[in-house]
Image 1 (cartoon, rainbow over the protein chains, first blue to last red):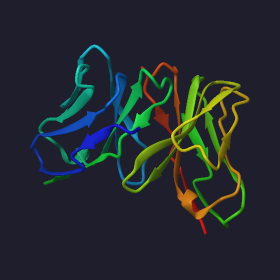
Image 2: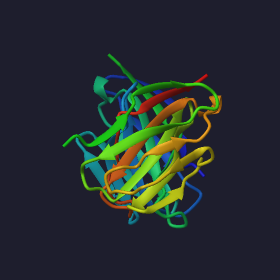
Image 3: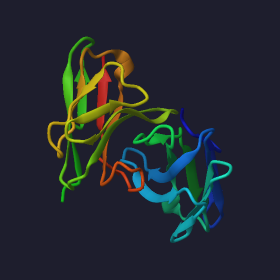
Length: 111
Length: 114
């Protein structure tokens, strides 16, 4: 069962912020975030493990709410290079070794 | 390091033909997997392997076979191609099967079945 991502699409002006959510109905061991540009392979952004930690990478950060089985990706002061499709991937405790991805969130940053 | 290498990059098959998509990694990763990507559906797991000689099914395994005779290689076989298998296929590898290490993706194989 795929995690649910929202929103499906976002359009921003350069410098604006965005939040992308990823939720699961089952207990999660880890949440991965990847970005994919058109015609390219997905590129790793970060991993969050159970424990509710928050990670950051430049102006992109993420949190993992273990109680809600939900993760959020925060894009701050967006840049044109942030455009692409963002995927969350989850590994559940009851389904080991399987990294299952959501359907993606398309992000477009305009000048 | 080349990372994860997939061949071919593009392929057109006729319905009923069989073929093998190749995937090789040179990072000594334990875990390898195959995904297919269709518009609006994200990446769906086909098969995965936690080490040489060990494979298992993912979300959408029907119509595909895999084997893992070496750590480096993880080929995906289409037994009898169908138009529904038209997709972009990605191979990925990770250092560990524990889900706590990043996945490295190959550049993909765009397959069209006519």
